[in-house]
Image (tube, rainbow, N blue to C red; front, top):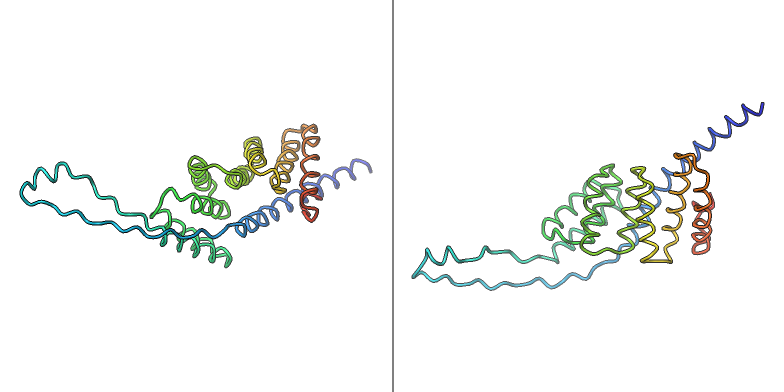
Length: 222
């Protein structure tokens, strides 16, 4: 009887973990999409064309620098806003296309890289998501970027590396209740996959801190 009870408890526990993981991933993505602040579009730059002397065309061609068109930040921001609207409509493939067009204009646009990384994660393209977030962090690291990359690593079941990202997210923003929650969640998953119960001792303080910062965080209660 005890053996049967233990088996039933184990099955229920695993089912709960799987359910929470699926629901949590969707909840976290939606939450972070709503956190994006609108950027003020920068004034479009105007470039004066240089006149070319006709007296020495060969010399001019050999010494002339290649022309680099100005970055149209206004158009770039329009694509990003379109992507956010498409995300609200759950049209993720269209959002990905809009963000790609924004990055075609400005490949180093951190906000576009972050949002496309999260969209790619939701679409199951974790490799592409990591590429976007790695590049964004190499340009300008912040707590939200490390948090986003931690979520991708968690979905890839790379729990140890995910914890490092959540560590950085908390370092940048000690008031991020979800960073504490996600780090605690990673510790729980590590305890399960490595059969090391001591990881639960690290998880509990993180869940407590998450609830202290946000008592309405249902996931941390679970």
